[in-house]
Length: 390
Image (cartoon, rainbow, N blue to C red; front, side, top):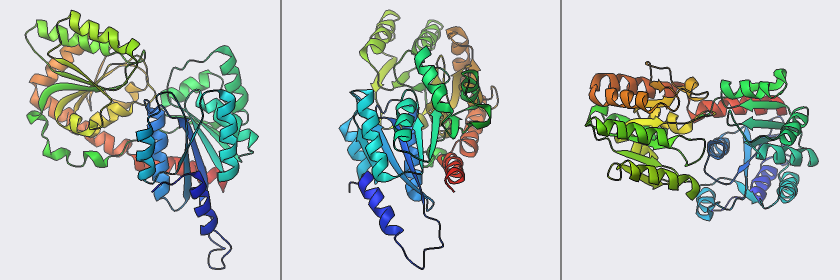
């Protein structure tokens, strides 16, 4: 059944109409999450997860607002609506159109807190919040490196003076925000989290019995470093070890085409597969031995955390964001950025040493469950929203 912002607002009004039996109870805090509707990055996944968790909370009444992109998939929108996620899509063809549509959504939903996720949505979201006189604004930064021009950074600093909290999705992102000039007293870190339920039957997949291959879940983009993993696999092939690799993630042709040419040049067509956007990521991870993330920068990599939750032996590039998730030699392995030889050596060790791979996989799973569950992430955001609104 479709549930949009108007329905969500209507339910709030009905639920909290004057009633002597309820008059002493605080009403749920209305929280609007605004994020890109591209569905390709972690910011959107976090906003969706927080909205879903908010629906289940008696203290939060959420609304998800997506900024329409050319690649916004109508089927994904319908899927969220059918799952009971209260949402609205606003136009993205111009910044002005986005802001004014979001202002109208705010005036109808009347949020107590507007949380604007990611660049550049955190700019347009907060402008709309100011125009709609939303009481509390929150900016969430999801990466350690964004495409800030001098003008947009100036806007971000101006908006920061009018924002209640500025949240980095990791300590590394928080440090970057402070380096940009964000106010120390209002800048905090709240780590990202994932749904752990899809990995509940991981015990049915002992690591030593899994496919001796690698899964890398990451969109094809300048940020990610698929090429280093491809070269690492070629290095292993030249040493006599054939390792299958699955790349799960969408992306533009200008990023995919060079990678496919590299695979062909190195003669790896029988080993490397590009799956595009995969809807069975938990299954892929739980049936493979290694989850890798070769990358140039991160905020808090959800895909790597999913690999940990799946009990994989995880490998990541030693860059900010990843270094916070993996403790080298304890619950995964870190390798230097752009170093395919080092990555090949770690891959080979984890393929031949069952005991080491199993130990790391078990520790990774424990770390994911204790530190990076969706419930813990939502508790932290809920506490923030309640503290601001009440």
